[in-house]
Image 1: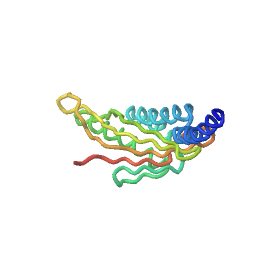
Image 2: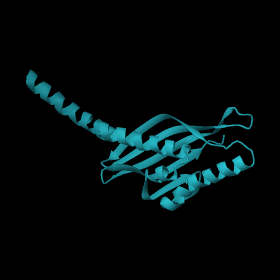
Image 3: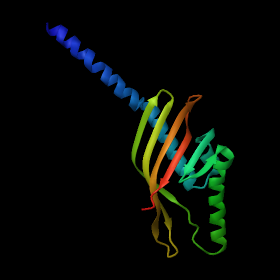
Amino acid sequence: MRSHLAAFITLLIVPVAVTAQGSLGTSEDRIAVEDVMARYVWAVDSLDPDGYVAVFTEDATIDSNGSISKGHEQIRKIVTSLIQRRDDNRAKGLPTANLYHVISSVRIAFPKPGEAVHQSYWQTVRRDKDGRMIAAAMGRSEDRLVKRNGRWLIQWRKLTVFTD
């Protein structure tokens, strides 16, 4: 009787554990997704257009508070416009307005094999005219990643800037 009860309990618990593990993804996939998102932040903060584009699929879309960028060419312009703004400010003797991201409260889920959703809150800081570091903006992001040819890449990114 005990062995039947143990078998019955095991049958009840195992599907829950397998389902929970499926939504969490494998350790390797979680680490890879975290790495893609870290490379994204480092590329934009260091104004590296090649590194920035490299974390996106060819058909990726970024929605930044309704401003849409599609594909590598438009996505590259996000960083090249930051470079232009930095150079313009430097020529005017103003602070370069470089941004530095702080990411927090990260959630990663794997709705199905080969797909991931990364959610987080973010804050950017920059140097003010008096040289102090100040908060530039805050918001949340949701990224949908896909695994292509063994590599995780961002396919869709939505940034919501808090305005209240």
